[in-house]
Image (tube, rainbow, N blue to C red; front, top):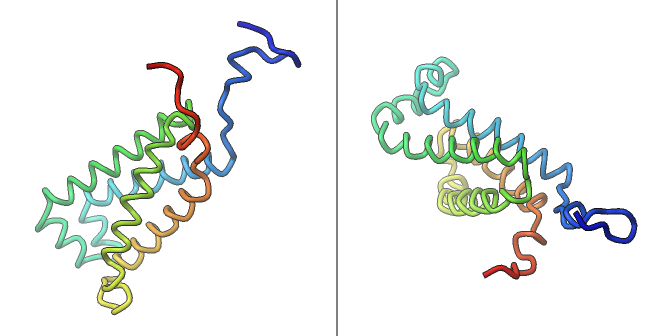
Length: 151
């Protein structure tokens, strides 16, 4: 590799920084996304924690909930892959922030009216925490950075 002034190789000088906050976000997503996804696949476990209404809904609409579970597992697996090259996987977290923001906007009337179940209020809180962490820690400079010279 070419050595630049200051002793850094070209590859190392081109390396993309990754903040500790972004690494926290990655681990938060690994735990949160996979945890939520797994809970959909185990409605009996949800029911044992007092989320009977949600367990009934999941059993009744299992195909739709499995779509959501698949999305959350995909985010969780992508986050595991992001551990090896966090910045490269940052667009995954942009998608996460966008879909969660859209969902929060869509359920905000019910949240304000107080018509959501306890589990859905909890979910809204967790989703809000993801949106805030995504907004804070996504490496926006990389996401909106200079265009590649390769075509």
